[in-house]
Image 1: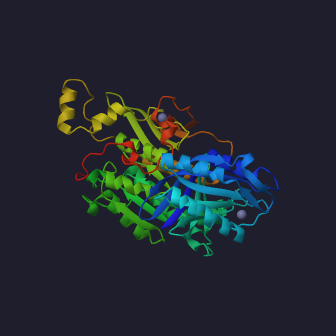
Image 2: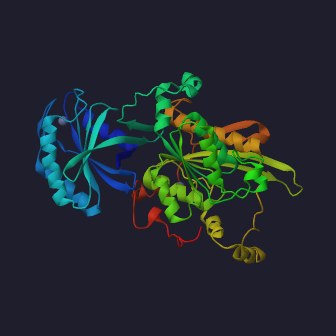
Length: 459
Ligand SMILES: [Zn+2]
Ligand SMILES: [Zn+2]
């Protein structure tokens, strides 16, 4: 099992401020966390930061700390009421990176207390020695297990990993290392990226992620290839028609021969058991052509702090079939930004229509309650590929801030018919589902992603 901890950027800033701001003095705080538990990863999602109050420090020096028990008794009560886990955090301002022998003695006592008061949850500890260095651990069956990753999601996506990868970077990546440096190459290798939809845009995203050296890629798609896909789907072949698109994408990743681990899920993420697999991804690309899937990815991002880069191309023509406009869109979403609903990229009416059968849709269309059923959307390879490349650039910006540290835009629009690019940022709508902070970092719940799932036996 891998243990990790995910923060939003401002939460992490609040934590470092509360434990590291008194120069030369240790500081402490508690993290109250929700959880995401899969067979691979036990992930804490930070809900609230509770700094230790000044009055509760019994001793506070550069190398030691003693805290009044009423401080953690109060926090434990609060955690119990909301079913949250507690991570006790303290700082080592003099830079000692590990837990000290004294920490080990004190924390065993503290965690024995948590075990009694918070049965059924796993709790942990963290020591911060500077903004980016830490040691973390979880108390599991009276033993310590290491916290190996801290994710900080915001303007930049940071993955602070406690792993020592001494492996040389393979020669394959020599040219791109000249651009972004060796650290980013090592980070790519440690990332697990989900791609939802393996058609025109998705297959081009997958091709690039693989060649860039991403460590693990999971592809989700319930569709099979049709003849008309060969004109733009990477990895498709005339001889591979009728094969599942996610499976073909996996074959294509494997065929390239780089050390990327590939997984394919040959069903739609509108099926709960498939959507649950998304929790193992560090980041997801939305390359789907339906709005319900985009709504699912929005909820995933809100509740699990998994950033979403959503990709789309729209080609509109007039009634005579003449092209009116060709627009590519790359929208980045994580909690605190405007979601796809806020931006009117998706809406509940269309999502509702998508859940109807074709026959039901036809009836509504005949009565003019709904637009006619769409036939295949127009699509051309140079547009689907270009917007996919823009999405990959966006990923690199979020990892490295190469476009500039002050950039605030969260959407890039490519107006192909005007050879123009525009960026924007929108203020979230206060009444939108994405602004209900109760659900930020909610993690696992009985109603997964807050949705009612249809019977899981269909595909
Ligand atoms: Zn210490
Ligand atoms: Zn919203």
